[in-house]
Length: 454
Image (cartoon, rainbow, N blue to C red):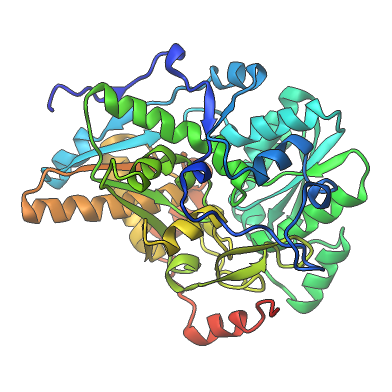
């Protein structure tokens, strides 16, 4: 296998022509979204005031395996896709491991992450519907950056509610959004009714993705010509992100590489769900026996310490209820630097797969993540985003195990984006002022006690 190049590229003609809907292969389908008032499954009509019409159709479809990628989106993808699958030869040498390590690099676009894959799709459907603009939330700012780019491309207005701690910690990503014409508001804010209520209940809060979602939804439903779009969690987002997994599958097949371990960071589930989609299909169908591992921050451990239950998708409790692994919609995570992983819940698709025992999950502390990020950057030449570095940490742990056992396993992980706008976090790590806050059982129980009861 030593004839494998550093970077396995697909040609433009090999760019996937359709998104893959993993739900079509699942034997147990994800539980439906519920109306927060009636607790009945949400219909297309229920969702219409919030989401774009064609995105609703994608959201509710459990059975269609493939959705053709519209030409306008496909042409946009060709500006930065296919993205490379990289053999981490330098990391393997530095670790003296027999493991073969591969990473799918999604940072080769201006937004710096995989988020553009879904942002351009959602902006396209909003434009096609004749809308004036869209609203959204963003944690670390990667989704907000991607959506502002997509909206600029389609000449749509873009209103972003950015988690307050990230708004303050990551000013440069905020400014990139403004370069592309987005209006960026720190959340929770005094500009919405739900924001005011959250601030009253949690004075001085640094915010959360759940808070920002509530504000973005309120603005969308109260302004004609606007809809809300989401960067993770929802089925439609995992659908669009399947281009990551489909390209990874095609690249591996070029060299007859069969993955033994597939690893992705997990916050809401967008990149992990996209990366694993064709491999999970094969695992469900008995064609692949790979371990699939979700990695989350120890400060926001929805898989490893959460409960599987129906919960609100937002802190303001205005969004539908989703059955997912959750820490409770009132859970406000510590202001750690993996802002894109600070969501209280997990994708219903991934939650069902995890509950079915088809994937594993592990949580890791922040300082260990940054140690891995720095070790990776020094030998592979890419400064990784804090979110991506969770996957790097566990990939390195697995490679170390191979060194002990002598097994040459094929390890594949998702490098979701770059960390060049996260240098405040790296500065705190280098200065020794980064902590490893982990919520106590009592704190989590207090949040669980607030879960909907019906």
